[in-house]
Length: 203
Image (tube, rainbow, N blue to C red; front, side, top):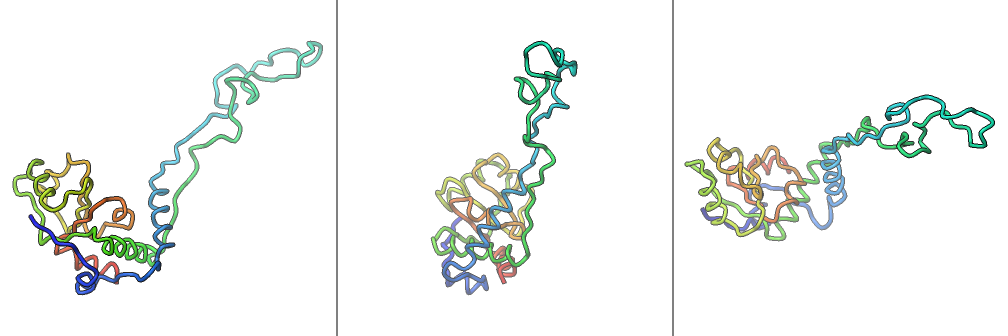
């Protein structure tokens, strides 16, 4: 398989909307932060004094021992006691983005990659035998980059099967790709049938 560099002129001929200058840089930053934040599970959890193990018995008499008054060994000031103001698994890291912000971020990311000459186009991409060896050979015939994002309108089951053991290559449909995907990989390969979808999403 062979591929050619997608220039800015070729992208405009395919009706892909590009940004000018630094327009969309803030939207791009907001989108990447939101995508990464939304993947956080928020399951860090520390135990407070009611959850740590230990007896609730009063350690010594309130008065007469010469020691400070102490009610429980689970107190936060004791070793092995509870944690004060520690992380709880009830925290929600979800961030929302408007449709306009998502579109502008996608457009800005795509523009940056195209201007850097890191977006390639190929007529089609499919692995008929479903073998990983054939998939690697096909990718190496297109680009020498160490990690690759392959965008298509859709891939058949055999192509997905051939790619599932290749960790440095991700197959994604043009309907699902976002700004973070475009920035994460050293090389972006777009099939011919995916250009129309990208044009609609950036319009």
